[in-house]
Image (cartoon, rainbow, N blue to C red; front, side, top):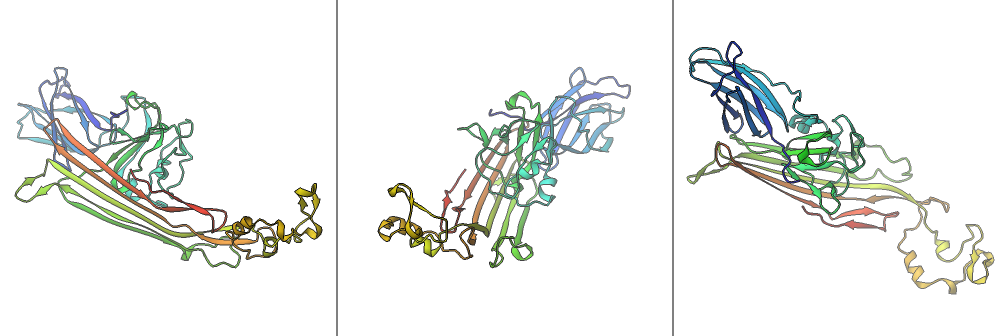
Length: 419
């Protein structure tokens, strides 16, 4: 699946005031941000089709000798949208214009696909509990269940998302028309794109078209540059000063918590002074996002008391000697010569209790730092009026990030991950 369609199209008919079809009318569809145009002619049936349009803002103009020029702006196209527009040309001179500013209907009459587009406004303006992935935003689409949390590292593997009654992990993911999944399990997402690097994405919960290969899809499109230079800086912070203490953290201070997400993006035309002028032709978009979380989690555990470490188990019920037929140890004491020196050293890896008793007698605030750095870059180049070249590159770096064990002295470190 290397050709999933993520573009939009505008089709329709060109008519005269009597609703008769007009052949040979010139229809020009122009992207407002890049000033790139696609020109098509109406067929003998009056129909026209402007395909493979990148999601974004457009205006459309139609003209023919003997008729006034028709122009409509304010058109926004989404991923996979098949917009339809009837254009009526009025008799007059082509120098005369009829201008309309109106959105096209978004009702899909061309396919049975059921889904929802999460646009750039939602990506940038909806309050989020973290910006590491789009999983939380997927829940805005109807039919999505257990969409997970926005607050979590972007991991590789099966996403816990169910769409339209499908099984867990059956949702496929494509980015800029290319499958972004783990090939070794054919499930799960490969690399999560940074939120500010996305133009929009579409959640298809039922009846995706044949080029996708699965009924349930997440179809994402990255942002590209335009004729004007744009830049954004972002910074978000959460800390422990307004947080509540864990109920079980008896005698401990409020755990450490400081979360920072920061980054920015920059886009525009490629300009090389005295060498290359890229306006209306070549554009770039660069994005960087960073995540730093310094926190501690409160854990309770049961550990051996100092007397138990010396072989004195009088604090517990009777323990038996397996070498003496299961009879109890005298006084519930294990002789010193029966304690293995290796076992003694292993016991030193566990902390001593800080609460009374022999049950849950240890409570700790265990540090758990996490780091994420992600870059994305896209370049678009117009080869001709009908051909365009686009390339997207992403790089992700996680960690090293420790995992939490039952006590502070146990745990592990997640390996670095790159994509």
